[in-house]
Amino acid sequence: MELILVLPTFLVIITFINFFTIRNPSETAEIAESVSVLVPLRNESNNVIALVDSLKNQRLLKNVEFIFLDDNSEDLTYQFLEDAVSGLKNFHIIKGSLLPPGWIGKSWALHQSLEVARGEIIISVDADVRLKPDAISKSISLMNSTGLDFMSPYPRQLAFTVGEKLIQPLLQWSWMSTVLLRIAERTSFSSMAVANGQFFIARRSALDVAGGYESVKSAVLDDVFLARRLVASGARGVVVNGADIAECRMYASWNEIEAGYGKSLRFAFGSTLGAISVAVFLFLTGIAPLIFIMTNARIGLLAYLLIVLSRLMSAFKSKGRLSYSFLHPASSALLIYLIAYSFLMRREIQWKGRTL
Image (cartoon, rainbow, N blue to C red; front, side, top):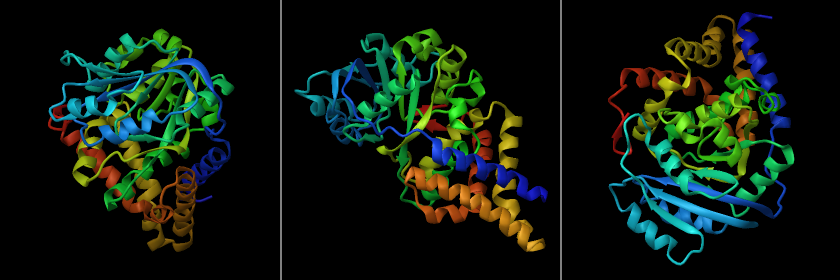
């Protein structure tokens, strides 16, 4: 087999296996365990009303509390939040303390919320996530039936601008094509941990053993590092397909994409060498096939089609746009740019009014 075909072939095989084996929260059952839903908020006035509507409609939870922490917002988040939860049972608001040195804002907000939470099961939800009414009950039911300690239902990623459509699908494809999820959920190797902090569920007992959110207090990628901490402490968990129960629009413009990825990508791969390795991977799988088409049309086209096939399977599972799978070379080039941007702009990127 030509070298240019080796990597795409492996990616297609892994994606194919995950396509048929990825877990889906689908069974509905009444949840008897006590549940605490933690929602950190900073400058989220545009999301508050729809977020509260999404959460207050959650069904089949016998004992649930919703804890909203306003992390010193500089807009009208707190005022909107007070109005939105007025009269709602089990909805609580906390005014967050000032961010101490050495902490990332989200981890600090979750840490404070966890200190007052009473639930046996802890759920963190980002402000831009919208949950279907049975999202939490289905997710906990799946976690219980599989005997897992934590779970990250991956929401459908909404994308409307061209930049979003090119970049956002790479998030799910990156783990759908490289990590065998059924092995990852039972492994003791923390390097295989996959998670998405937009919607993250864990047993309180497992969180306590792992050191809680304090264990990732300075981690920009708090979700992945928390999953790694959980696995390293003996917990078992995995990302699951949450496209049917949750959705999220992470970024609404290219400027937001640059800021969002710019703050995190330099931490995502462990080291500068890791980032270079990922950039090379993106080049080999996204750009090199086009170059080979010019010199060896058959081999180059086959490599391109294999990658597109893996992208199509990922997009189908995540309810993404299938047509943008064919633009994988452009997506790869943009993500390589964002990796470089993250390193070049370190200590100059602001997120939610804070410099990272």
